[in-house]
Image 1 (cartoon, one colour):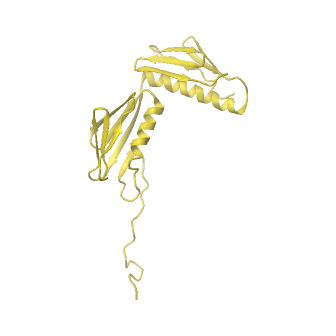
Image 2 (cartoon, one colour; image 1 turned 90 degrees about the vertical axis):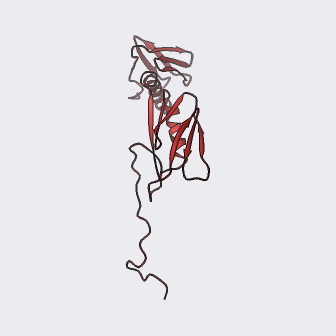
Image 3 (spheres, helix red, strand yellow; image 1 turned 45 degrees about the horizontal axis):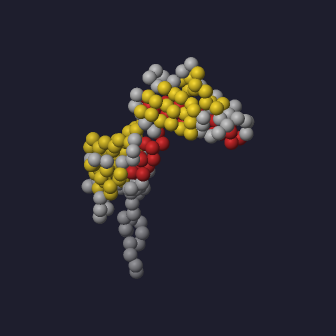
Length: 187
């Protein structure tokens, strides 16, 4: 049996969970989320606990068992605490600003990059070089952070770019100085 899949999920106070057919709806203080799970699996809400059972011991069902359990658990965490990703911008003249429902990025390109903020996500820029992404859906928060980071990934020579807070960018040495051990030119 899947070790993760067989763990029961506790429902905290102030959270409502309801299963109808192959869909689970979870409502909490921060909002509502719903998830349609694979047919054959059973989710049962009983005594403030959600339990997931799988249809068979097939390899695919075992893997999906743990996945469904973790997705439902992430939904409960999302509607109670929410999720947050922090991005840091490094580079001279690199900055970010939120203007309405658009994140404006200045990243040394000839034009500014305008990123439309997805529904259900809030983005804040307390400083021009820090971006805070918040939301109740873990997948949406992570996807928005990855999309913003892809506009200018951190490069290994000067470290310029957008990186996750706490992410270590492995630095490389630049070009070796000419004449330091070599002939330095043609003869």
